[in-house]
Image 1 (cartoon, rainbow, N blue to C red):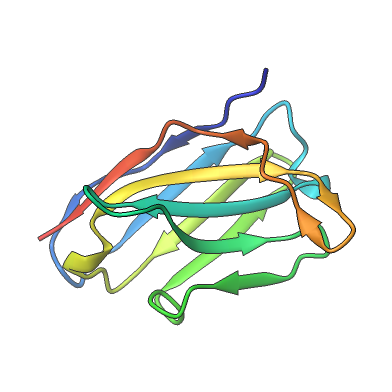
Image 2: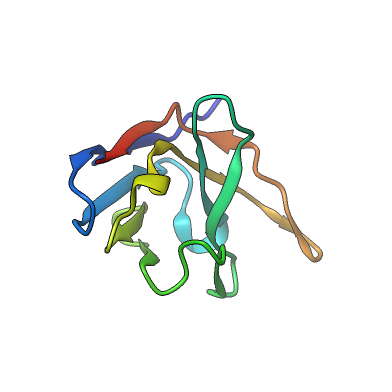
Length: 119
C-alpha cells in the first residue's frame, strides 16, 4: 500500500498565494501520472491539474493562469503553486498518482488532503 502525503495548505486572504507539496515516495514522479484534485464541503471532487508521464500539463479552466503544477523528480515531489487565490478555491486539496496505461492514467494512489481556505 502506498499513500501520498500533501502539505502546504493553510488560510490566506483573497489574492494571496500558497504552494502545496505532495511527497510521492516511493513512487518515482518521472514515471507516473500526477494530479491535483480538490473537494469543497457538499460538493463532488473536482480535478484541478495534472502532469502525465510525457510531461504534458493540463489545468481546469477555473484555475488556468493562476495555478502552476510542477514536479521535482530528484525529490519525488509534486507541487501546486497557487496564485491570485479566490474564495472559490477554498477546498480540501488532494494529490494523486498512478501509472499510464495507453492513453489513460490510473490514479491508484492518493493522499488524505491538505486544507486551503481563502477569505
